[in-house]
Image (cartoon, rainbow over all chains, first blue to last red; front, side, top):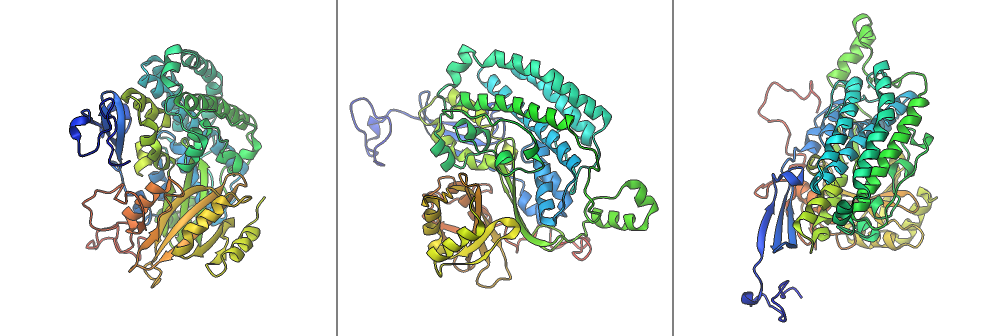
Length: 409
Length: 166
């Protein structure tokens, strides 16, 4: 069939050698810096009028060689690299990396630190989904919902700020626990967020969920079956929208996720509307988890007893010899990790975020590979947009939540 | 629940002489196979009626320049979503013959993973539909994740390995 050109003039089958029978196609560059792609990646679309015949993806515009850089860095300095992958939900990346190293070192993190991590990770998930669903609204033509939710993301960022001082690239937590305990301000802000977020999210959902225009734009657009989604390596909300209830938090619980009660929302058709709805419901579930975690926050230390890897308190550094030595050794990255091979995955904003770490007993990883969910499922995009219009392609891309930082690493 | 032991014994029996070096670092079943057997093995695991190890999590490469004859290792991470069972399969390749059959017919998602592995290590996946660089520019004439390409400028004298890590 390959010698037959697509979309021949009516009534005739056009061969490649008969270009006069084929209607004129347009090549359109969507990206690399198109505002609607929400990131730097290019799609070269072959268009017949409004219809997309085929497309070719080019990625790698912000590739920063994290895997190579990581091979020369001490373990604790790699956290800042993970920030810059999915920058909509940095804490998940940070903690995912910390947990990988803790698994390698065999450090048992205290319950309190695990709960704080869960709170932060779920806040990050909400922030991630706020952006994705808000942007989906913008791309379908409704800006107000996005602005309305952004205000709540601001509050999440304030909680991050209280927790670690940073907002976007958080570098939160340390190997072995958290760098500081939840402050009373942070606890107050989290309680406030739990109280004030539901009405806002409800109003946002009222704007979109049963909105005729929004439904017409999204239902049956970019649908992908469960089999296809699995074959293309989908994970996270995009896979769940197709009807597969795979969630790393439930299947391989980490950081005490088994203590919390929450549901995994799943969709039926795997279309844009289902992806939107799954993300919306996940925000409610994340809120449930945060509520349970903050109300049952265990007492105790917020970092593990791992003096070789966790920075000693500053007072001790000034007054105790041993603490000073550890401080110096950790900061200079002179701690050797045991040799080993670890794969650890967490449920990132977009799906299974995996860290494959090989240590040869040195100060830096011998090899570190990130399993980046975006990178893997974005390759299904050409198939999903085939035969649709360019406006559909835009909303499919936003509903897939392709984050350029994670795509390129 | 599947156990590592059960699966390992079954695979060792089924693919006798073709798989080896079974271990379980941090609880994940890991073994080596040869490149001729990787696709039949992946297919067998995928179509096995009870194991159903049918989700390809990741493909990546590792470079061990000191292992003469086995300089490169291609690592497959597989996952059975039904049994919640993960397995890691490795294939060692010699640097003079960096060819391995593609898994992209079995798993469409392997397409970009293999392109990435090619891009960074120069491992050639035979039968791949579009084996070109993916993250780096196409004009690049080396494979950056190989160990012989140091991250730091080799002419620098102010950073000594003995003091500043690897």
